Image (cartoon, rainbow, N blue to C red; front, side, top):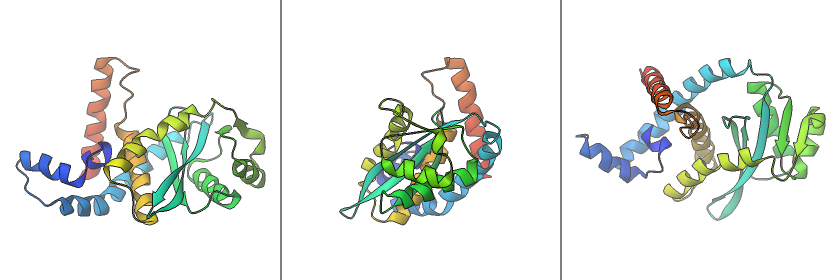
Length: 213
């Protein structure tokens, strides 16, 4: 959880654990993350999706960011809801209609159809949504998609700490796990009182321990 939640390197985690009396190699942290990260994220996602499907009034925000892998540009497509919850992450080599269509279909298969979809001016979104049948639900505006733009910040911080990615498979795995765990631990402390924040933080930590068990 610490490795995914905070912008720390593997060696940073090795030092922090050593201060707590746990003497391991930084590569052990990598092995833990590769093996258990997707498992824990899948369990958290399964529970959250069951509760989130009831919110049929959702407004989705779709956006894509450039990610450089071994000197080549790749595209990380991300969907967030009106509250900033990361719904889906999808990595592709292109930014065309086929990639946008595959990304939207993947998100809809898990979360259902939204009532409104906010995108930027990329034409691939409009072309893909015409094929899917959601063209009448698309909203395009200069400032409407700030929710998706802001949601990229945790990923960018982790990308810098990890000194970029080396494989698309690693990027896809980490983006999916990061989004799920960020949803779980992010309590929007600037919007709620201190007492409510402490209550929600304790509940999230208790649920995390239950998943680990």
